[in-house]
Length: 136
Image 1 (spheres, rainbow, N blue to C red):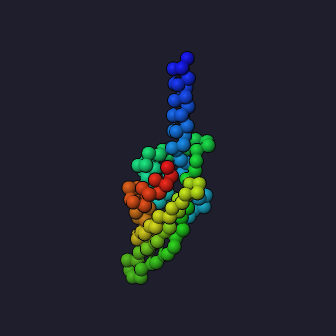
Image 2: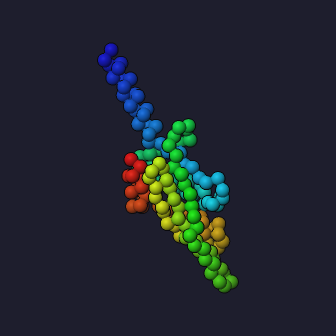
Image 3: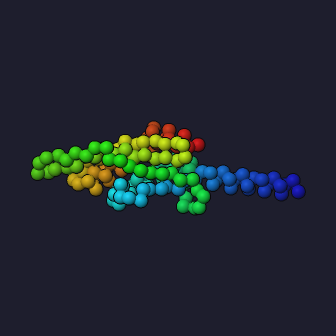
């Protein structure tokens, strides 16, 4: 009887622990993050969470990790080979914990600059690791 109770208690604790270690990525409904850069941002955030021992889930009741972005500066270089330079603040928030990741990207057009900026979100950076530690 004790063995059954102990096994049941362990199973319950394991289930609670696994559900608490999952997050659902929530992106803004508007097009603040272009469709070309969205998969890269999503992949990098998933890698960041997985490096910290979390998982990404779409299940109901999973805590949400809200993602938003603001373009803080946009510059276009003059000349025949003009390029667009963007500075972006990517805000990630879960409950009362939030972090802003500054990103910079230069490309042939705005979509290309966004894509290059998204690639600057490094899952193993000190800022990313510190954010994941705060989530624990």
